[in-house]
Image (cartoon, rainbow, N blue to C red; front, side):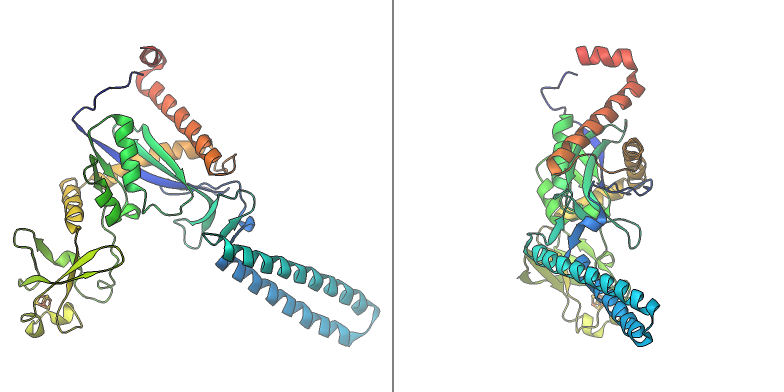
Length: 366
Ligand code: SF4
């Protein structure tokens, strides 16, 4: 198809979502994962090795107790049993040595993880409680209108927090649009990524993640404090103003502290606000980027529902084609190629459904 030379000055909306590819378990409609060719038993992390060592130690202790018991019986049957138990203990001790060697290798690995069959596959958590897979994280940007995959990426990072800007820019480049709106779920919420989108033509829309424990403790949360940009102060639930005090730097940036030293100590709402002498409300120096993102979301109340429906279609199709199985290739580069072919096939099939075979062939030839 003909590629547009100049970017049209329109704003298109895309939904970005992810799925980590993993092993032979059934997937769910949204956010389930496929696995890599690497079996879970062939993937080692510090925690997994420690758990397996603990299990082997417990087994050895059980067999030693059984050995004591058999030794006390002293008949033909117990002699045969003793031999079997000794063999089991020998086997477990060999397993222990292998695990100890693996423990050392895992400690020395850059990300403290080793996969034996596919060295690039990584252990990733899934949405099911206590479940996990060894696989890859597949990112897609889907056209909200036609459900075409406009950009995709495969990573072996188990979360999406660093994917938003890169995927947004990829989608923008693939479509030739000057400006696109990228809608993603909470897993993508990351101030640094939203900031990285600034000036790129990518308008991110990601709902905020609630990281503060205040709601659980029955205290006001950040949403109860309204920022007044014109006067650079916060309006608190009691209606008083918190003004800018000290600026502190944390690991990533400057954080401004807003407070009201006179109103808080005598405020009747203080038990619901802070256990300290006065409330300190923190504001990231680039918080305006996040405020603008929230304002975009507020203007599109149904957008998260549309996002879910949009990303379900391509992921559902791709997973059905893979029959809930794992990738056929090993290592990140080859898995990327495999996924590119899957995406190409999906898009061709989708375009056949939208245009029909003949018009599509004519468009390709044009
Ligand atoms: S304690 Fe301070 S910040 Fe909290 S509601 Fe009262 S006046 Fe506002």
